[in-house]
Structure formats: C-alpha cells, structure tokens
Length: 80
Image (cartoon, rainbow, N blue to C red; front, top):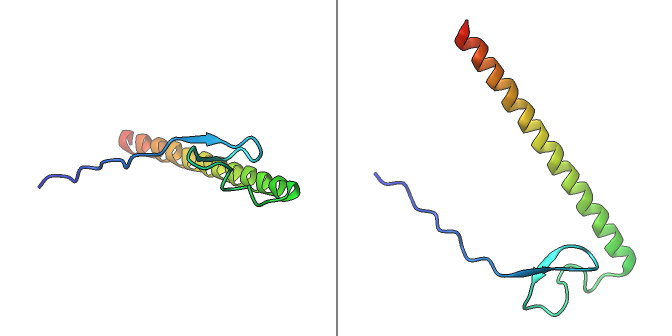
C-alpha cells in the first residue's frame, strides 16, 4: 500500500502591515486585520499577539524538555 502524497496548496504572496505587524494579501489595499481598528485597539491587538507568541514559545520549550527527558530515560533503560 502506498502512502498518500501531500501536495502543499499554493500560498499567496503577502506583505507586512506597518501598523499592526501582521501579514495580509498583496491583493488587498489595506490590512485586513487592523483597517477598522482604532490606534488603541491596534495596540491591544499587538499585546494579544505577543502573549500568544510567548505562550507558543513556552509550549515549544516544554516539548523540548519532555523529549530530552524521554531520550535520557530511553538511554538509561537501554543500558540497564
């Protein structure tokens, strides 16, 4: 049985918004994330994004620590 072939869908070119820092399609004239937001709302959006990125980084570190711990346990069990 053959494994399925994964073909990545084409990604559209994007540009970075100077106001909020998020990416949006180059076909759009304005950023789809912040065009209807006030300056205060954009600031809150940036804070929310930073918190999410920090949480993702912490989750990545957790998985790294778990994988190192599992590797050490496997080596210890293999040599016992």
